[in-house]
Length: 528
Image 1 (spheres, rainbow, N blue to C red):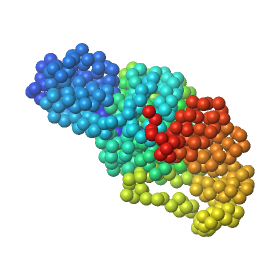
Image 2: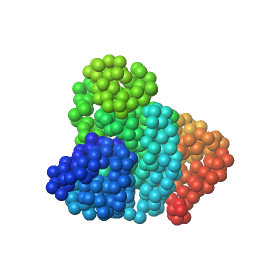
Image 3: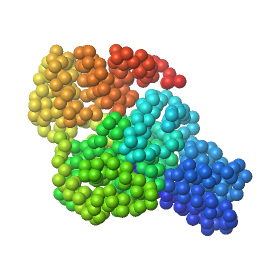
Image 4: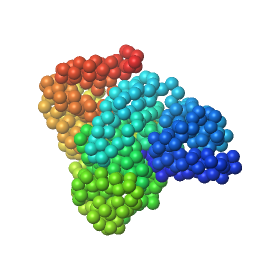
């Protein structure tokens, strides 16, 4: 999952205090309209515009109540939380729109955070292991910024802050979602209030695609600025999915299992409609429903690019920014009336071929502190064939006793029946083959498994070991980086990167990875 409660929700929140200011007798007079104008700009995520209106009225602590309140919201959007709380409390307007409560929560959650500044981004996180995430986040977001500048035509100039939070409760407190909505939808990050908020991968049992997620959320930030917050939710999420891997030169927004969800929903006439999508994908009732919605809107953008080329996205978002309606913008770029575009989109979803592995189940995100999902998960139960599970369990018994050849035989029997679609089986089979002396067979099994599950961390780490032994350092590095994109707190990943980068002549990179390994194994304090 990616984005949570999105811009329409933020705008509604800001319009509420603006209306309250207008109605309250203490807020009448010449300052009320200016304050409401600033709040409306913030509702559209236009922090620069609101600042330009309000900053000349400093010092805010001595300003009239409407200006003081609006300035407090501005400071909240600028992540200056203590000042935001002080100004809103001093305005005497209570918790209009919930912003005083949000600022207080943000002040508490981020207290003591380490803030690291990059060229166009800053990362705020807890001291400790989360600091390992920082250089990867900054590098990824800079690359995503460059990709979006090319792919959409413009990006905001202001520095964007990423707040990494420790658990579901903190994400809920900062984002206006409930903990239940976060867990049910599998939401791990939110782009809202002029910043990006994301869960640390350590909050989930097996991590998640945290770097693509950060890129996805920043894409929301760019789309909002470029369209002046006029992009409807389906377009916001479709574009964010389309571009989320742009930082690594890819546009593959539809996974095999999400494509299968669409096929099934088309057949059952159970697609997620616009009304159900609003106000947020995070409020959909299940992770499957949210995944279906993402796949649908991704296919809308995919169809548009296939029919009209990538420049169509620049033009469509530009038209929105100029004040054209979503329907007009899409119709002009698609070259057909909007209702016909909807028909073509639905035809495309019905006819689009399934990628390989389209019958995979959704790999649900499992939160460590969830009483349902937080317990150990029996991956072997994912194998539907009972006889194969029996072979695999026997292989496990032999493996535990160090009888690698026998383990290899049993895992091979299971593998021959169900193929490479189950990562735990492929990984154990490859390990047994390697330990019993046939590393060629192990590599073949891992290659096949990764063709089905290219981001599965353990498989990438296993293959990197074999490649490193053969002296294939660049491919070994790439597989370790793929593993790191999912599970950055595995010390073996960073230990492997230290060796590989040293061999490739990247001494600074090797030193950094060696330091991260020491941090994760408790041998060294976190990075300074």
